[in-house]
Image (cartoon, rainbow, N blue to C red; front, top):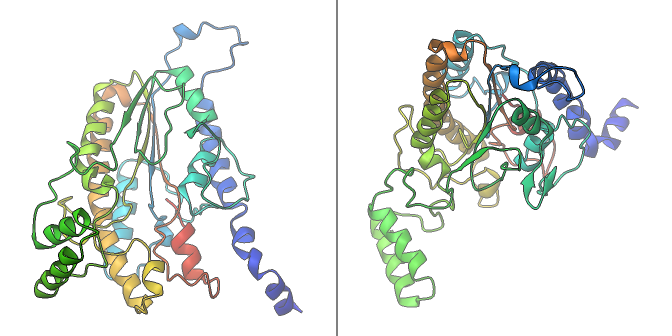
Length: 361
């Protein structure tokens, strides 16, 4: 009987497992954040005489939760211990077993910023938006307390009318001042020729010869966006801005880190290797052995995590040393898991895939 019930409910299992997860996270974080927002206007007090403590709210895209880190993979145990040390060092309360109900940013982040625990829908439609701009109860509240500065990418627009200032990374511009030089190595030259002359049979034939000589795989290409390439310089720009504010502004930042592609080493230096497919689902049809591919992806993911941790440690140390931020509220969380899954949702729901997709910092 129990087995039959499980079989009947198999299609709803992900929803059943995660229907309360975001509510659990928000039930802990939301009351504290709401306590830092300005009181309603009807209260008899002079808002201009009240100096509220600054709030710095950072969303780290594809940052897996502590207990979701696969510690059996090379580098996993080190990444797990480093994550815990980082947040212990700076006095954070870390929710190791937090899960996001959604595995898509367009769902998870807008819902979180509106304390929405009722959204059971799926798909790529941006939630809580108007004219493709996210509307947020939380951000509006922060903007009432202090000037609100938003740091974002070109993927999702959080710069509603509440924001005093918006800083937007030009995510799709390889020539951006924030993007590290991509170089003109053999592989980049081939890809550039391929993209510049897509309709030329002669060029394509010559590229195929070059690829064979150079040992390149032309089925792979450079990414469409360059957020990861720009991350080290962009984060430094963000950190300098926060510190320079002297606690006179609230900040919200959506950062694509440790988001794929995994091209940064532990010291944040860009490395060749962006040809890795985005998700393992992309190599599933090609017959690639999934467990080995998952291990390779996670090893690269861990290196990029170390880069992120070093940047966060630097910012948190600066804020901790600055009296202007002595009573600041700093919130850091992911939007979903790493999404490095074995692409087995088409066949069955496995515990490993659920953790990869939904375990969130």
